[in-house]
Image 1: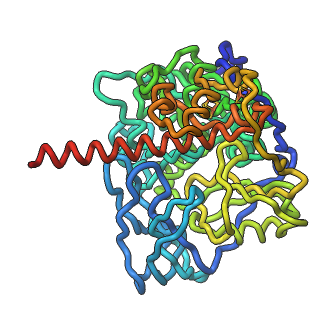
Image 2: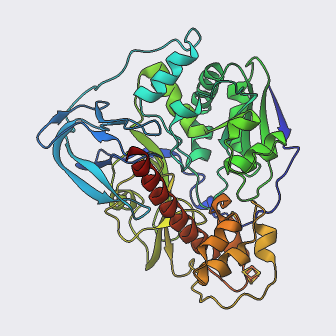
Image 3: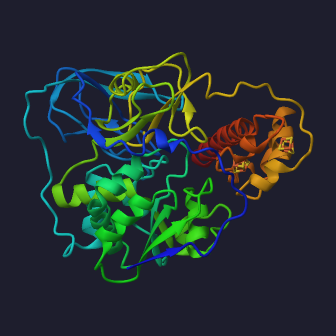
Length: 454
Ligand code: SF4
Ligand code: SF4
């Protein structure tokens, strides 16, 4: 095992102020069990899980309450024992609606449902994939891609590199940092399990250089591991944690437009996902809780809290000492790619890495002005797009023009908006164009399906 600086870098990117000092030194604390949880059936990428319970049902911690409902989907488990109060549609952080199971928790209940332990040293890749699926493991860095799918490369493809993503490049977020610092051995076990599932690729643990204590903890935990394993220290550059850009920075390989990372022989998993898989395999624990950074100048005691999924944002805010002053903005996720949320009734999911409370002092109010053609957005775009041109197309209602400018390749990183002196809402324009194109494509696909049936 060695530690080395990244040998490559990607084009573009920006250097936002990090503000991680607010919570990076705060050890992870457990949230007392909330009295009511709202467990969403849509905590992952793909189709929402099919709800398996109804009002009045008794549930135990770890019991499956949502069945995977499609190839890209994930099972959902109860984070606590209790009684199902209702099944209702709730708003999610993105603004979409999703069915959720409301559970009145029972703090006196002991134990819960666990699957039998698997000895991963003897397990087959299929055993590990099945366990990831049974325990509802999905990417915890934000996208929520089902892990069982990700570690089942299509026939004919080979995984050369397993990259564990510990970059956490978004400002404010510190949940992965604390996990690597406090539980590096869980990350190591997760890495070994993933490596076994993927047929023994080289392992790269990618961490930004602003986390020297986490790098030291990982070096200690990974000492003595066999095979080609490296902690790759990345420079601080947003969006270093983006899958495609991390592959470029760590291996020098480029994921072609529209292709999956496995097409370049790489699989990227978040460090928290690796730790969750270790718990699923070694302890039979479904994914029912996670660490979330609750931070910003709008809460009294910024912190890192391990909370059951389904905890309402209001409870996390109270755990962080409550709001200070006038909170101007609450963001689920990081400030670059996260979502402004309208209220604190929204429940956490497996992908809630951070909850930011920002006062007026931290939120720059602005109005946008016409493009001055400075080209900064183009230089900042890590996807080599023409953000100003795309923005102009969207403003004039020319979604086809935006599509022709490859807007579907936009990763919505926000680097263009961040660097724009005219404060133009370029990222929102990209999001809007992508949503329109996706909707149009879905209509076309439905029409084609109907025509084929007729
Ligand atoms: S156009 Fe998309 S990918 Fe490029 S900088 Fe803007 S948000 Fe990021
Ligand atoms: S950064 Fe803003 S002002 Fe400059 S070219 Fe891009 S959109 Fe126009």
